[in-house]
Image 1 (cartoon, rainbow, N blue to C red):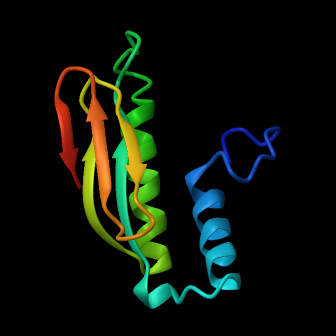
Image 2 (spheres, rainbow, N blue to C red):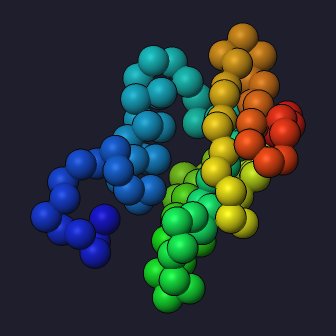
Amino acid sequence: SSLLKADTNQKKFANTALPLLVRQMERLGARKYFIKAKIAGGAMLFGQTDALRIGERNIAAVKIQLSRLGICLEAEDTGLNYGRTMKLDLKDGTVTIKTALHGTQLL
């Protein structure tokens, strides 16, 4: 978020969105000690140049914020060159990742 000071959308950047999400979860009764994270995404799509590496930077930023918040990263499906769809089952915490070329997997 510090690179785009004109963009004030707190839900757009890892360093502002994750603390906001955790505060909202705690207001609803969650205890940070029990929160676990599973992440997906950060692919290099659409011919991005290696200089940009936006996906890698986003993955790193999320991991830094999770560490700062004391939240355990349980699983991830990140990087590479293909998109993903992530689905969370709120009943049991199961995360399903779907991809066009690599099928479906549980995280």
